[in-house]
Image 1: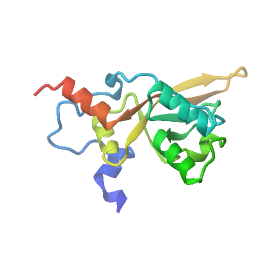
Image 2: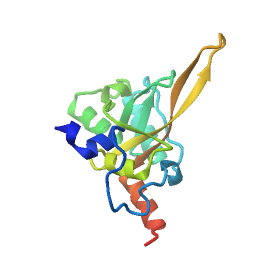
Image 3: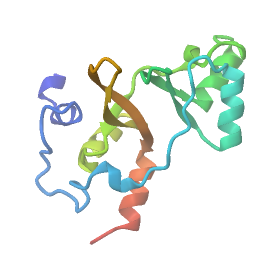
Image 4: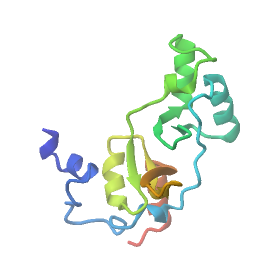
Length: 165
């Protein structure tokens, strides 16, 4: 099933792009999109505060990231409002109660072709950058940092502004 689906294989990094006639932008790196830094919410932010912040800042969505840097998911304005109005969440509940924990990640060095495959099924992808961190005792580990959130509109805007036909 999904293991023989080429788009699933590309999205999950098991295959390189299989498209024979690739558009001019297919192999361009995600970092060329010049995304703005995202608004990040900590998990203890209340649903009410999340709604206020998103509206005030003009965002529809924001990643929820623990202080440790662990990406917990994405909160959207519409889902938060819907959950509160339906009674499945309270204004005072932490935003984690309405956070989508199913999301796709993509790296700055990945291609726009891979991003395009992800956006065929998902409304957004969280752009991450891996960074090595070293502790005081010399041990090191890789930490993912949220670099941005990318949507199909971001990709479409890039392609239309830079069309090389």
